[in-house]
Length: 116
Length: 115
Image 1 (cartoon, rainbow over the protein chains, first blue to last red):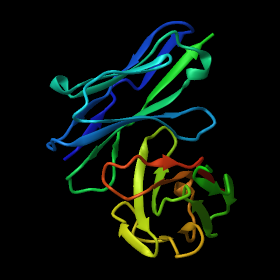
Image 2: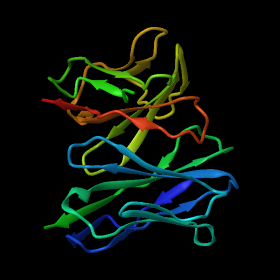
Image 3: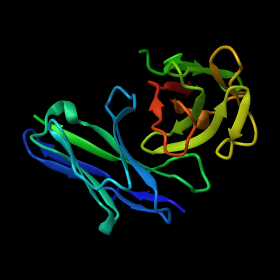
Image 4: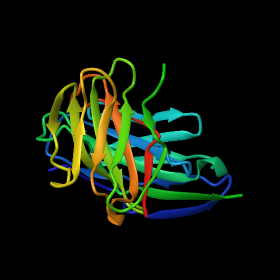
């Protein structure tokens, strides 16, 4: 069965600090995809990234970067030089290519608060 | 390219009334998923539909809740005889092919408040 753990319930930082949001997953499948979504205070869910299990190359997009490590079953998300607009709940999710469910498993989310 | 549309954005109902939530998927997407998010909680899957078919309703409460995705028009999530515990944000997502590893794109959600 697939499982996603976001152990950090809430993180509070001051603007310009770097912050890493952890995501640890469990799966028996060798082919799977990992996702991150952002839910700002306005409430909508915004897709950030999708990464497949065969691509362990780190991804960088502006101030956002993702570190995928199969050895530790982790797909961590780092925000560099955080800004107030980064305040949101961030969800990590996992989909198995051949698992029993069509539905991704979401973590419970990490609430990031960036103070000015 | 319009994203996933949901309406209404906010819905207030009194106990016992019906709530009807609508979702139009992204252009070119024919697979729709409904999720519920209770306050301070994560996303809970409810139902997965293709046009005119319910594929997986394992997350739907057995009573009062139903969903459809007709050949024409939006997907509808219907909650009959609402109770206070139904107050939540309901999100719709869509994907192009319904493959297990497709990215799901979410709508802005409908916030249901039951008085």
